[in-house]
Length: 111
Length: 114
Image (cartoon, chains in turn green, red):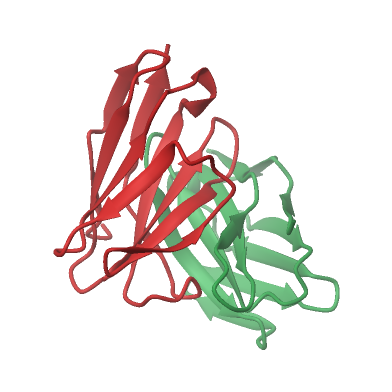
């Protein structure tokens, strides 16, 4: 089946930029998503990118998509302690197929 | 806040029992999906309902079943609970029937099976 891979942990200092990476296998992916999950909570949609785009910026968030390498990244500028959470990459294939999630990257922000 | 609510927030059951989890979708959304998130894992798709009918199913056994009501709220039922069913169960609603529509998640129900 389709697969989404992420590194499990990332630690950054407050004020630095964070870059969370994701790779996926489905060449027919149409949309790619980033969700944030805080402890004990559900998933919060952060941003998404359509597969015919290579970059999307939304305030402190920048998403880069390399469709050839099937690589997606999320950059968080000026990372704050409130950004500490688990970040999930998810992809959607063509047709009526469900979201496929990675295992999540736990971001720790050190003050 | 997505407007998607789930109940209860926590639940403890024993092996072999049955459980019902509930979800109210965001206003204007007629499609609801259910996901299982085991500890340390990403969410896995269970199934989706559109206008009271199942509209896609993941790799889960038939003891996982669902319902959607005319007001678009939904239930997830799990029979013959097993220890591995312990997980966070997430409900997500979308404004359309396609699984490609952006999904908005509720806070989840944490189920513990002893």
